[in-house]
Length: 486
Image (cartoon, rainbow, N blue to C red; front, side, top):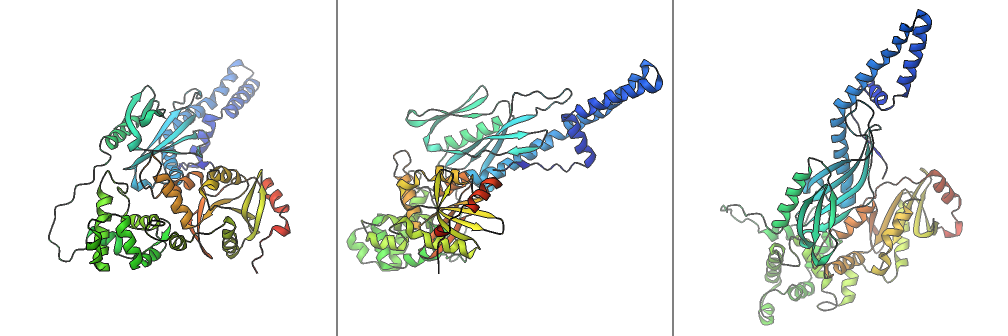
């Protein structure tokens, strides 16, 4: 990510004093000149005292830095917390968060109290996991923040203990895994962070207490509000299926019967056969609500619509024809089947689409070239889990050559990715945001392809490739690699 300049609101005079406090050579040169000029004009050694005058400016500069530094440092913390949300995939308002400032081993000029350089880490805490965004750096003299490019998340169910050590917090993990460290140094926020982590660890599954019931006529149930009310915005997705399509599938009697089996709705087959579709839906929704609120459940705290969509996906093969499921999740046979829809999407944006273009040591599946920038948009097509294992590394290398990097896939691929993760023995829980967070941590965007339609689900972070690399790629674009869409 590009360095972030921290705005201070200081007047021009204070900004000049700030510069002189950290860059003293101009004042030292001025001291020498005034001393020489004073001695020459006074014809006396006492004229050298004129060289002391810049010391007053230096003293004022030191006072300015010492007074303004706490505000600048706090601004840097807030800016990094906001920037880090793109990497960890967590919204600030939906998490507790702490920014930790650790002074690096560097010496400040005489008279300045704060250190010139810092390592900065951010920790975001949610109900299910906490994410650590370490490795950022902050230069106080330049007032610039350089965010890191990697983040890590740890689920509380994998944590057995949290302890404070000398200069760091130690996270002990289950199954004998190597403990994790969060460096805190002497940051005063460390105690608050430790308290928040321990509170979530000791009661990670404590659902909020229900409010005192008050009689309301015809009040819709929890599931009716969360599951059945169709949103006006069809951009919402659950298991990467659009909300409107999800409700369309849920109206199919065949899907309803499959969900009764998949979700193991209580009752015998004979009892289920006597129920009409509305009664079956009510039973399905009651089971979904039960799963969502049960701490030991595979679906604990997963939104009801997500449970519904993921359960439809998981019906494939056992309770519904795999071909039907793949059709409804827009599966494709080959990665190449994604190329033309993505190329058309780029063309509609004003880009010229090319295929199999060399970017560094790797080839990008589709490259969009917009002459108005010029801007390059790299799109990596993925249609199998095995191919995606090396996807993040490939996309990171493409970010050195393109201004935006996307992953393009079908809802079927994305759903399969979530299921493979959920079935891992160290996880065993459905995590609907896993793929989103992985992409956001790298600053990548996500395109969901449904037949000939392409939807931008995640916007990428703008990259800053060198103009020389961009120019070299543009000049070397082969005409026969251009995708013909006529």
